[in-house]
Amino acid sequence: MSDTYIEEFHELWTGRAQSYSGTVLSQIENGTYVRWLEEALRDLPKDRRLKVLDVGCGPGFFSVILGRLGHDVTGIDYNEEMCRTATENCDSYGVPATFLTMDAHNLEFEDGSFDLVVSRDVLWNLDDPGRVYEEMLRVLRPGGKLTVFDGNFYLYAHDRAYESMNVERHIEIYHKDEPDCRERLLRVADMATRLPAAKERRPQWDAAHLIGLGASRVSTVSYPDNMIQFCENGRTAHLPFIFAVSAFKKE
Image (tube, rainbow, N blue to C red; front, top):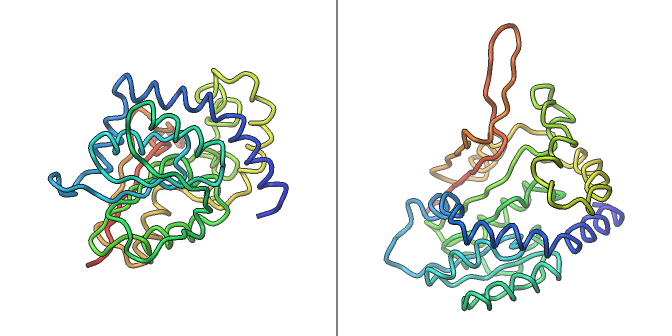
């Protein structure tokens, strides 16, 4: 990861902390958070307080919704402003949570520290997502679960089937309320197309990698309202754009 890359992404997320926080709080208030929460908690004990790690916590989406249920949440993010915003949001909801500035590639926790590791819209912009999956599994206790939500945001640069979701379309759909960020987003998109996650069809890659790391009960979910339609030779395929991948650490 180059210093220029780190600086550009750090600037982007610092500048987006408040607008992204507004999006997150809206999803919490209007109830659309439920599908993420249900997937994260699926097949976990319902009567136990879980020790949770929120990787790339951003403004605290998972930290708030899991903390409100009484779970013990620690959030980490590489960006200090995101950690500060997450702290403010959890305070406003009366949710106790701990936030630490940390690199997801090198989690500063002991092996087997958490029951659940969650992450949303993070791995696409990391230098080595495979390494992050290794770290997530390492800090899980045996029998613990990880759930990652992400998307094929920049695959259009490498895969013709995804060309309809080019950078302009991406900004139009996902960043229409952030006109001041457009030039910065275009610059970040240019770099993101060169990152590892932008070169693989996901969640297929994620599932295969987790299986290779020895994870068990690996599963994926693709959301029908976030699919790419691709037509070729008179046949139509619907390909995943937004997805979830879950796995358990072997006991």
